[in-house]
Length: 380
Figure 1: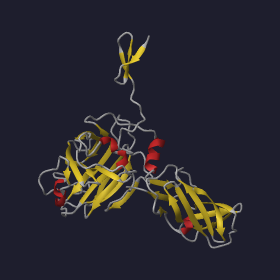
Figure 2 (figure 1 turned 90 degrees about the horizontal axis):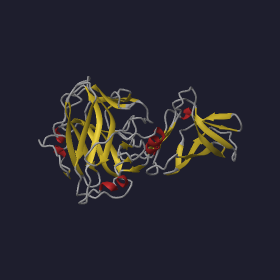
Figure 3 (figure 1 turned 90 degrees about the vertical axis):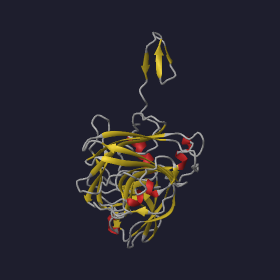
Figure 4 (figure 1 turned 180 degrees about the vertical axis):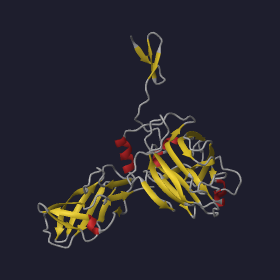
């Protein structure tokens, strides 16, 4: 039996029958990184959240505060049945605020590099529409707001969606028309952010008309109609399967192998830690002894980070870090490790001990506890 491509992602056999090729699980149609919430380098749970930050699931930034309630964020295993997801991002209100101040707000968003958005042709007459799809579950029904915010040109568009049934996974699809104004620069800065509102004070809702067309940002129009998810400690929301793609139709969620998704996340946040589950410390790397009190080590990031990190995260105290040298000799550090000469590919780290080292010898550096780590951020 002979066959030929039929030009529409399938094949046609010589008997006239057609068979569709399975969609490739590897690709980049989804502009959202880690939309299935699988990667959580910072940890799987963070309590007592009242301000902006990256807390658990990689690439998803919680933005806001100003007395918008207190929250716990987790990488949850509650997912829609039969959709192929293993994780969701959950926000649980733990201290309520039923009477929001005008400036209170919280939303979850992801910032996207401008150079990854050139193909949407924003700011031209050929600007592409974008379709945003995701699965959502909450105890609180009602109107919620999704938004795209153009960081470079200070332009914005919002669309509403409805959670219809409490405690039930629902899939939502929203199409944003292309924006013919505001060209995005071809750089590694934030082109725009895509977000879902949770809480909105009157500063963001008082206009009375939601801004559903691209326009220069009018703050009181950004979240008109948004429910107050902070009005009860019973309130929660779970989100997964987040996808943003070119066109006016939502296609099946783009599945990406774990290692590829991790590498995409590590462009923005890179963490060295014990992830084996065993009761062992983490070996960070090797170095050379520079003086009687100092070892200089080097770190090579597994992927190029977006920009050279300006600082290094550590945890605990100096004694959580140790250098090994001269066979099995070891000393705990007397100060936390210091970063120097970092580039987007890596850098040098200095570890200081009380003394007794011999210049020119080799050594390695590691943690003394199972939860100590080194991490670098190049987030947008």
